[in-house]
Length: 101
Image (cartoon, rainbow, N blue to C red; front, side, top):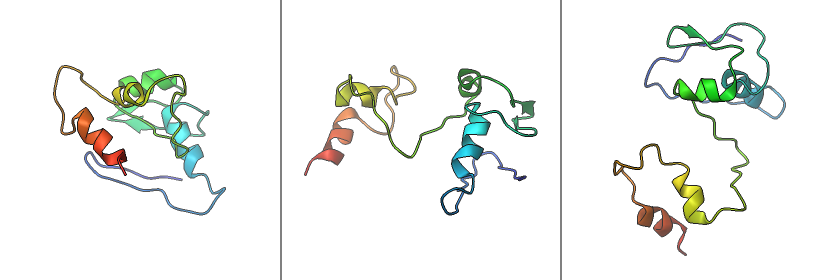
């Protein structure tokens, strides 16, 4: 499979179960060994460890949406914050409002 994603572009991988969507993403992220070349911003990243890929700006959110069971809801949400010093688009209260019935 070959594909190219431009900076700022949003791409979805679609297909039925077992066609390789998750494996493709896991290969990009370094979770499983890739077959071939993977470049990000002109740099070969195939074979890098997961944390090395993440440090270059790529992330992966698995579809099973696992959370850390030993942490509170607040602590799990804090894990998603990139920069604790800057106020982003969403406040913690906004997140909690989304879960209220």
